[in-house]
Image 1 (cartoon, rainbow, N blue to C red):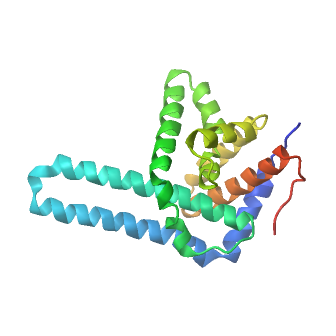
Image 2 (image 1 turned 180 degrees about the horizontal axis):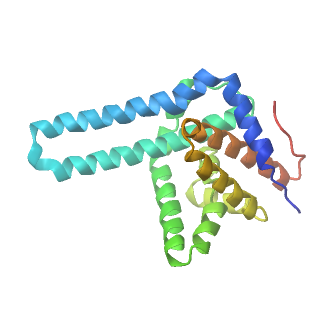
Image 3 (image 1 turned 30 degrees about the vertical axis):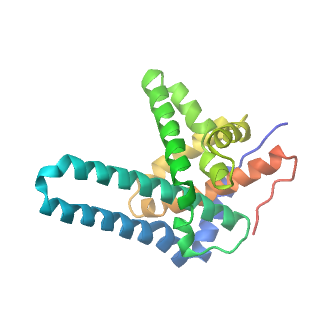
Length: 213
């Protein structure tokens, strides 16, 4: 079955939702992650002042905390974005709601980035292919598919639309370099990706493409 993926519609949906729920999204995607990340750094810095000889130990803890928070935010934003697309109630605390998936999330993200990095180092193109094939795995993971099934499900959904997703990734990367706009890029990227994920899923199940209001 031929698939279609309209990047413009996806981004339009994200911008529309950002305007409607500006405070909720900015606090959830920006303020809460910033506060918790800063808190983690401050706590580790204070502990280091009491025992400066254990710099390697504290650096390891800080790195692990950063990784855990990054994954928690990634899964939380995927969960929240899908609820926006499905027109369900969304709360600020949802950004931290996927803590039960933290370990599978860390494993999945590590597999994703290691494989993408290896592909980019070797021949570049394999890395780009992996990046597009597994692009939607966080959304599949928060819907309870597990690590391997999330990766394979993403690969199934992205079949025949890899160039569309690659173009989308380039647009997001370019927007991230623009001052002021780059603050909102993570929000728009998460919402638009959720929209694409859900519409590709509908096409996979032979349902009509919809732009959920």
